[in-house]
Length: 266
Image (cartoon, rainbow, N blue to C red; front, side):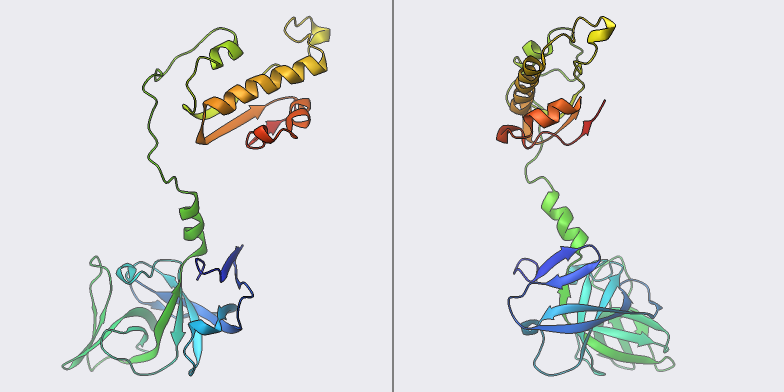
C-alpha cells in the first residue's frame, strides 16, 4: 500500500493519502505469529483504501507478533486485515482462537479427526487441534500492511557494496597542513570525516594560528569544506565541530547543504 501511495508514516499513526474513499478499520489487538498468546485487545483505528476490501463483510485489523508466517510475507510488526467469518477453506490464513483463550495466526487445514494450524516458517511446528480441544475461526486474512519501521529501514539501506579505497593506508597519522593534505586524497574515498578546526577566537591568548580576519577565516573554511565534500563518498557522513560563524557563513552555499550533520558552538 505504501508503494501505491496510500500509506504515509507518522509516528505510531497509520494514515492514508486522500486518493480514493477510505474505510475506518478497528485495530483490535495483537495476534501471535509464533506460539499462541493470550488474546490482547486494544482500541485504535486505521484508515484503509476502500478498494483493498471485499464489497461485503465485516473487517478488522490485528498487529502481528512473531515470525511464524514469514514465508507468507507476514512479519513481526506487520498489520493484517481480517474478514470476520467462522469458517475457512484449506490453505487459507486464519485467525484462530484456541480453547477460548489463546489466539494465533496460521494456515488452516481440516484433516481427518483433527485440524492442523500450519506456520509458514520451517522453524515452527504445526499446531494440532483434536476433538478434545476447542477452536474457533475468527476470520481470514485478506491483506497485509507491512511494518512502517521496516519500510523506513529499507529506504536507508545502502544499495551498493562499500569498498575500501586500496590506494589509501588503513591507518595513518599525518602531521602537516590540513588543506594541502586533503588535496592529495582521491575523490569520494572517505566514509566518515570528523573536522575540529581552530575557531579563530584565540587572538587575546597569543595563539598565532588564530589571527585571520573574519572574511579570511570564512574563505579558508569554505576551502577545506569543499575539499572534504570532494573526498567524501556519496553515502558518507561529515561532522564539524566549529565556531558558529562557520555555519552562519557557509549555510547559504548550495554545495555545502549536505555538510553540517553536527555543529558544536564553542
